[in-house]
Amino acid sequence: MKYFAAFSPMLDEGKSQKYRQDHLDYLENLGKEGRVFAKGRFADGTGGMVIYIAENYDEVEAIVKNDPYVVQGARGYEIYEWVMTTDAVLPKK
Image (cartoon, rainbow, N blue to C red; front, side, top):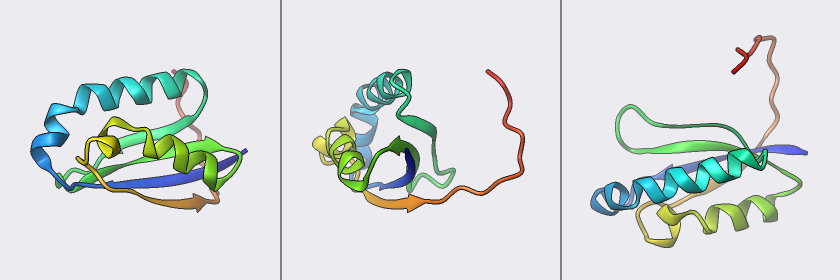
């Protein structure tokens, strides 16, 4: 499996607010499937980022294109394969 960072720049703030819960529910379901490594919004309100776990770019792009934010035109997207290197110890849930 590989990691992919998907940036979701803000396109329409009103739509983003309207479809926020749908977006969060979508990510929650993907998280339960083991597809989401990390997620969060940018503090300045310009969008957010999700780090997905997938086999390849096409798989992630299909996931991102089905996100309610993208479907409804609230956010755009940019996807980059991310090669994680860290010595950090992640907290247990």
